[in-house]
Length: 539
Image 1 (cartoon, rainbow, N blue to C red):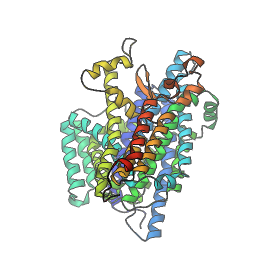
Image 2 (tube, one colour):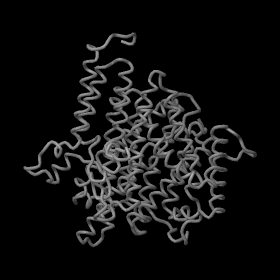
Image 3 (tube, one colour):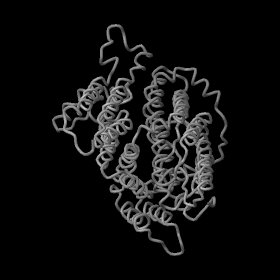
Image 4 (spheres, rainbow, N blue to C red):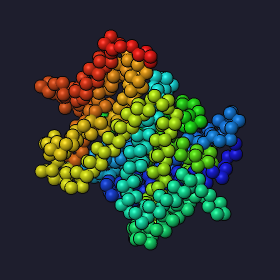
């Protein structure tokens, strides 16, 4: 297989646009939410992002060429690699923002630096967890049906990649609908334009032109304000200082689940690639995934990277190994030159939204194509937690937009629930589903597979696994803050001393005990089913 083929151009433009969206989101959160200085954003974080992208993308391009050489095939597509979106959002709102607010309340001389240090610790610890997942991958895959892996990933793609962008697309129909039509032509209809112009290039160019004509672009006033050259350099001293400070335990409730979720999601993406025909070895893929995240932290980035969602989409475009190499070089140049500010000024996200919608739909279709027909219901079940988590996050953003969390008389608490109940909306169920939703998706889908196959004892075992996860705080355990609901790990309550001798009740020690009990009863039902049911052909 050649290091670069024509299909890599389309693949590169698709993933480059995807990564640009991530970087633009990152820039908006760092500037708008955290208020970080240009020195931290352009001088520390973005160079660290560049290092992680270059390490990962070059490795996965080389890995694809090696697999092609081994198999004698010419259609191998490299694993896509980039910033973990869920970790990005979680680390901004649940790690760095609280750290900065606490630093301000305590009168710290440099609250931005305190928040950055907290992000460095979270990113580095996540990389260690991702690295560790490499040695458990085969065991995890051996006991987890493919339907569960693929369905979980499809739910994430449909919810976080497709629905949010769909809202945005229809909010600006003059830009969104024409570009969506072009995506239909290029990706659904496989239409080839004159002179061989890559279809996705046309999508982005037309979308950008419409954005300028309708006044959506440009964004900002001075596009060259932060352009320059920012060399990456190790920040090991800063990282060591951050690790020595009290930055780990307060955010363990975020770091541990996000690290495990990132490792699981990367494993699911490897499963997705195998389902599309490209069988990569789990261990080296996941090891480099973890190394990339640790490298990001060592060079200043606060955002974990992961094996990306959407391999089937890039493969369907004809991308092979070259698109990954181009992606690494492109993102490196954007991050090291400060030109992200110029990109944010010129190209709005709306120009490429239709591309992301298509990739999300490809994942959904693939989930059914590679799954036995009798397991279709299990696939549908596995998609639900991702949709619920997206709905919960959307509901909380809506509440914040109308003032909740911004004043003492409007805070997130159980007191706000009766009003939602009156409108038949049980929002606390969404809060519970949001926490550890990837675990929930896998477990419910696995249970559904084993019930469909009448392997009731295995379904019972997985129900008990769910109960253990609940007791550990990895699923459904949440607590209220003034402006959010966040994961509630019992271990954190022990370390921070919030459990006094008089408050060691069941709810304090095990915040998700009700869900644990529910899964336990479910498991008991499955266990006795062979004795209380009639045998059928599937038994």
